Amino acid sequence: MQVLDKTQVEALSQALGEPAWVLEQRLKALEAFSRLPYPSKKDENWRYTDLSEAPLEQEAEAPKGLRLSRDELPESVRQRLEKTDASGFLVFVGPDLVYAEVPEELSQRGLVFTSLAEALKTHPEKVAAALFQAVYTEDKFAAQNSAFFTHGAFLYVPAGLEVEKPLGVFKVLPEGKASFGRTLLFLEDNAKAAYIEEYLSSDLPPTLHLSATEMVLRPGARLRHAHVQTFGKGVWHFHRQRALLERDAGLNDLVVNLGGAYARSEVASELLGPGAESEMLGLYFGHGKQQFDHYTLQHHVAHHTRSDLLYKGAVKDEARAVFSGLIRLEKGAQKTDAYQANRNLLLSPTARVDSIPQLEIGANDVRCTHGSTTAPVDEMQLFYLQSRGLPRGLAQELLVKAHLADVLTRIPLKALRAHIEAVIEEKVRI
Image (cartoon, helix red, strand yellow):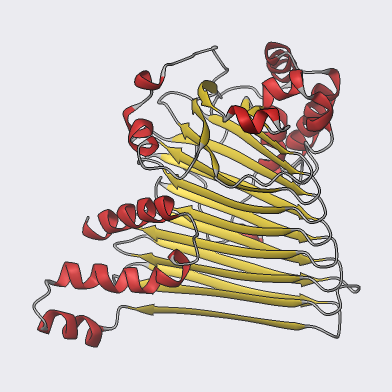
C-alpha cells in the first residue's frame, strides 16, 4: 500500500509541470483526504456496499510520455474507432495521452480539446475558470481524486460555437496500478457540443479506477454527454460527476455501467439559473457477482428549471444494483418541473436491486414526481415467445432489450447506441 502524502502530491504536480495554484488546490484536497474516513456500511449512502476487498489505496501510475500511432493503438480502441460517432478524439492508455485527432477547423474557431496537463500550459486562464468548481472535496473519493489525479481531458467550447459532431475520449486501463483521471468540460455562452467518454480494459487483478467529470455550462450552453464503462473483471470503478448549469443551459446526460467487478456513479445536476434543463439517463446490466451503484442528485436552485431522470437496468445470476436518487428543491426554486424514475428487471432469483427515490421540496409552487419498480421477468411473456419457437435465452434477450428500449431510443448517437446494445446482448447470453 502506498503512502498518500504531501511529498507525493508535490512530486506529481512538478512532474506534470503544473502552475502553483494547482499545487495549492491539490494540497488543500490532500488535507481533506487525510481528514475524511473511507465510507463504510454505517454511512447511509454506503449501507448496501462492502468495500472490504476494494484496492482503495493502490498506487497510481504516473505518466511516462508514451505516444502511439493509430495502428499501434490497443485492439479494443481500434475496433471502437471503426464504429464511433466521434469526429475528434483523444486516446489515453493509463495516464498517457498516446494519440489525438482534433478537427483543425474547430481548433481555428477557438475550440480547445487536449489533455488537462497540456491545457494548463497553453490555456491556463480557461482551465483556471472552471477546474475544481464542480468536483473538489465533497467526500473521501472526491478529495483523493482532486489531490492525486495524474491525467485527464479538457474540452473548451467558446461562446456561440456549435459543434455538430461529437468529440470523444477512449481510456484504456492497463494492468498493474490504479488510475486517477479527471475530465473538465467548459462551454461558454450559447455554445453547443456532444462529448463521449468510454472506459475499457481487459480482465485485471483487483484494480482501482477513480474518475471525476466536471461540467461548467454558461448561459444558454447545450451539452450532450455520455459516460460508458465496459471494464473487464477485477476493476473497481468510482466515478463522481457534477454539472453546473447557468441560465437557460441544457444537459442531456447518459451513464452506462456494464463492466468491472464494482462500479459506483455519483451524478449531480445543479440547476443554478432560470430556464436550466437537465435530462439524466442511466443504463446498467449486471451478471455474475457484479455490483452497480448509482446515486443521483437533481438540485434545483433557481426558479423555472426542469429535470427529467430515467435509470433502467437488469441484473442476473448473483449481481446487485443500487439506485438512490434525490430531487432537492431550494426555497427559491418555484415553478420547478422535476421527474425521476428507476425501473429494474430481475433475471434470476438470486439477483437483487435496492431502489430508493427521494424528494426534498423547499418550494410550494412546483411539480415533482418520482417512481420506482423492480420485478422479475414475466414468465407469461417468456412462455408466449417460447411458444412462437424462440429458445428461452433469445426470448429473455428480447425482453431485456424491450425493457431498456425507452432509454436506448433517447440516445441520439446511433453508433454509440448500437455499441451499447451489442454489449448488452453479449451479457444476456453469458
